[in-house]
Length: 105
Image (cartoon, rainbow, N blue to C red):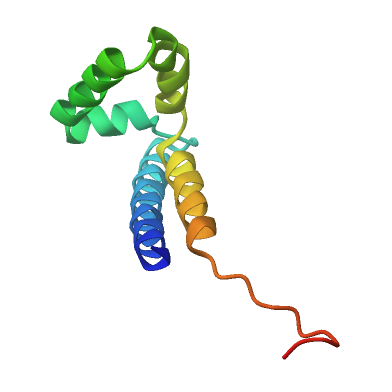
């Protein structure tokens, strides 16, 4: 299970780097900082999956889960969302080291 969490974390980290590179290129071209919202990036790359996600939210979850909840997350910069998700999966797959104290075996 830790291996799967680490792999998913790495995949989201790659997505974050790609989103950061796209934003950096756009920022240099526009000569001002540009951060692409996740909804804009997702709808330009795969609008069908975004519509599928909206349908799943509306059929299986309460209405407040989509409108203020998911839409708020989708309005955030894509790089930030991907970094947070990557961090969550990294922490889920992280192995804690045992302290090397007096009673360590």
